[in-house]
Image (cartoon, rainbow, N blue to C red):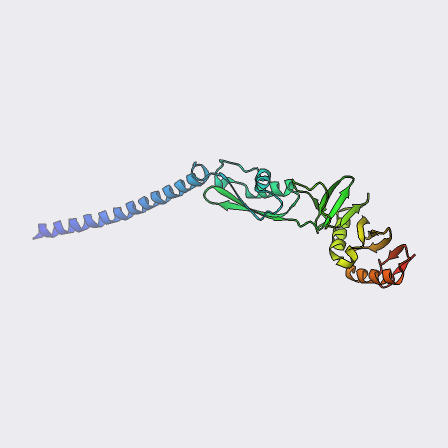
Length: 247
């Protein structure tokens, strides 16, 4: 009887020992599997040939072509997707394509870079000799790769003085977009020297001192009344619309 009891005790002890060892082995196996999965994932993302840049998916363009955007992006083809510097792609596009108002790039797994573009809307034409650029509301000038030989007749033309800076061009853009059809039909071009020295040159040779873009809607109303009341005047000053003058 004593021998049987000792055998049972030994077997229970052996089972407990094995159970403790199995718990330890199980944790070791889990740790190995987790580390293996992490290592495989890191390899797959950063070093393997499976997830590499092959091209771009471009959206949002109107005047720009997909080819122009891709060329400006200078994609690191065949580089691992996870190692691509998305910010650098956005910076290159914004710097190389002046017509881009905003750009948002992101990874489109498994092989593409998604590029969403918003273009500037041309509000006016800035003429410089025989060439021209488009004017955005920000005061920035921009071009497209394919530009008509002659500027679009529907857009106001802006002539820029030597002292005109970006703020002056921003004010000129605001003036150009604020003019109603009745005034626009009379205007040959807009001349801008500084932000508060803007002049409208009318098609019949008369001039309108506009000042800054402030109160442009009121200035337009005052100008139309002055043109009707004093048609023989050669110059109109509506820079202070509450105190207009003519000469």
